[in-house]
Image 1 (spheres, one colour):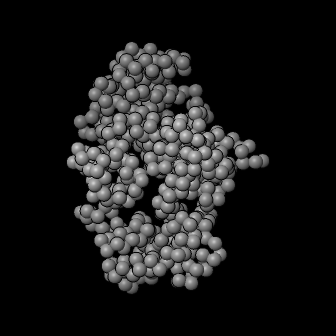
Image 2 (cartoon, helix red, strand yellow):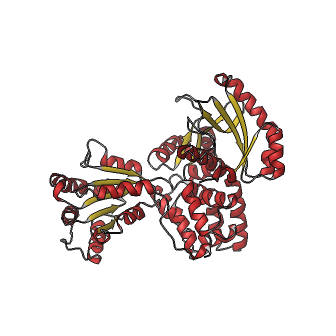
Image 3 (cartoon, rainbow, N blue to C red):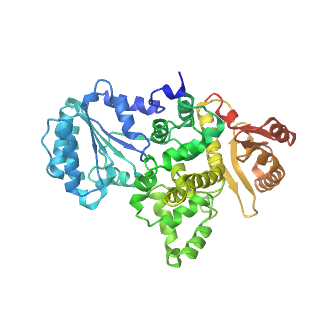
Length: 488
């Protein structure tokens, strides 16, 4: 059977799937919070966990970004379409009451995009829902149904459910946090529907990371096994492309353009400093310079779109931070795809595709570092061989221009591993003299490793026999994505 003949399945999430099934099987009322970025598979997890005996007793109600009338009308339409025998809600209070009735009748009610109830115009719903939850908790042993709230903005979900002054504080009985699919699950998708070649893994992971919905879009378009530009054309550059408006609709809509200047710069300059962002903002819009710090704080803490990393071993108070877009899809869209995709109304598609692909190749350099770091961590966590970590793998940089892409520690065995990552094998082999200088300066600055065994590693997508020999002649270990994905 060809890879494209397989149906789409449910991939990864075995631990979370078991946890959710265990929660539902208790046979008593539960109030579960599921958090994770949009498209990460929160709804699919609920359906997969409940698809057998209780499939007909799951009420999924999406929450629109609307006023009370819009939210209630949307819920009423869903309840009517599912022919649920509960009173039709007419306002937020009666919506909460209808949810309580449905749960008492054995339904599992899933409220999606629950973070919208942090809006001022919808906030009263939380008090109404608290009344129902408290009554259901008092009757828990006699109630077979439960409530699941799903949300994609972590800080707003936390404010609704964890702040001491919030109506629903301390009501949640269980919590699940959904992150990206692990790389083993991505490889499973590629083995079934494509080929797990290292170049394809990097290309797709740099675009989609571990978001199952995006891989399914590629499957539905029949391009998971296609060449690069065909993937981009079908998914981003045609009028019916499923991902052409994804970033605008699901990431950037709520920002309403306020943070574009900062986001685009970080996406195109991964690892930039606060000073560099300030200088760029000042050159583009002098009035925005004093707002950059506030923008970065909101993008980090509220939306979790930006991550601030410090060099490994740095003190918490160090100012030597670098900024990155935390999501591969958003970074790839802003750095490589958005401008070419917007230009296809007035330029040849093939020309726009060539520009987008060239920009993506450049973006894959940083993507490779992220991928390798995740592979080291996943292999260590799952005990699949390789380097056993005792510390999160991070990069190192300092004021003397020392740069180490990845630093890995095995403290029990006193082994230090320093790695350089380059997308092309020839470049990683050619860069070894420079890498030696960086490692020497690092070791002079970090005297604590004077009695440790130091391993230097040159990592790329796919080594050739010649580059492996060249790397090993310099006393380094040659690793590539084939090595790092073996046994996953």
